[in-house]
Length: 129
Image (cartoon, rainbow, N blue to C red):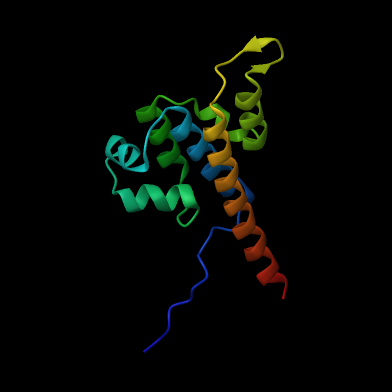
């Protein structure tokens, strides 16, 4: 009987991690739970959770469908998610006033970003050994 690895599988591409972070920002910004997102997208809760946690890769067609059904701008997914989060934290960008995100939401997202970054960096370090 084989023993399952306790290490989490995570996709090793930087763009994939960026997309995971944008999923998280957009979901929290729009006050949706992972279950609500799964329902909107007609996927299981587990599938959506795996996308957001970086366990399963999201393909271009899936990302377009997610953005279409969620009414999110797909163009924002190519930007730096840390910069986007900073904009929501400060409530402005180049003279444009945006809705500020509540500090507890910002903190939640930053903690999730750290988990994704740590998993990604650990994955890279394991490849170097």
